[in-house]
Length: 365
Ligand SMILES: *Cc1c(COP(=O)(O)O)cnc(C)c1O
Image 1 (cartoon, rainbow, N blue to C red):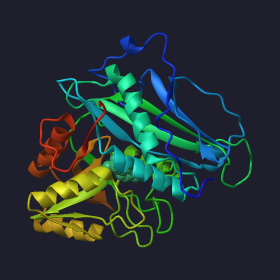
Image 2 (image 1 turned 120 degrees about the vertical axis):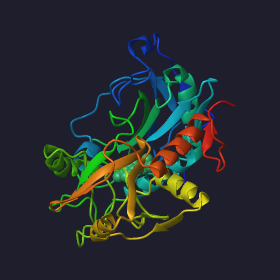
Image 3 (image 1 turned 90 degrees about the vertical axis):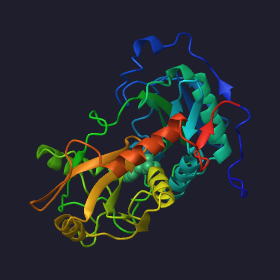
């Protein structure tokens, strides 16, 4: 591998188009979430010590050996971002550079060679332009973009792969939670943890999700939507929701757990922090214990709780249960601040609010 880092291969994307589009099979007004995939996908291979030039090819199944190293040992990273189409037909991605940077940060943690950011960006642009008909126009719907990189050696041994595959697939999506902005119900599950300091809780790698399925099923059997994770050491401080970061509005301040290694530093989280500061709110990234939240609830200081993440954007929290104590917030509607954030972020995404921070990225030249 070159010592100057990955090279930019973006100007030479090979394209093979589908013979016939499948778009007629999909209801773009009601696409569900993560079940339909657009006509094309991007594929990049890493071999001979470097990332080869990107290919855009028809979306198709691929064969792999049962000994594929990343299936066994999880040397895999991914991202999740979105593209939007507005009523004028303009297509924009939301903060793609930050997502690409995070993908490379995840790769470093998993010993996966980085891809030149410009290569990914230009490949994304091309892929989205080719499948632009797949981007829903209906407000609330969008094109979800999923880059995935995995070690592709056929070898049964725990060591970094010598070859890798990066695929980028896209999926027209509606609201992540069926109920839209209907508040979700969270419960702690103190028998389990999501990530400990020094682990990989701050990168998007499948291991962080597989191990949360069982604890999530336990709370779901009791009628909750998701686990509210507490810290691994003391089961005392709030971390995140496992696909979303979390915020607590305590009067005029907004508190969110610090991104210090055990939680995923969300890009939506960053957007929320920037907007809340701009609106004059005191935003504090600090440890917040479940006991403090219970106290704030009892004293009336806890006004709103919400999660943030690309898939759902902003998700109001209607209830938190911890060891038999229930904190009940508005079960039907988002609070005013939560709603304002949702409206502002989606407004910027669909292009009817001013983009003051350069978050919008046009895919057309
Ligand atoms: C992706 C993800 C988030 C949200 O991050 P965004 O960049 O806002 O999409 C939060 N927590 C976890 C564990 C995640 O995987």
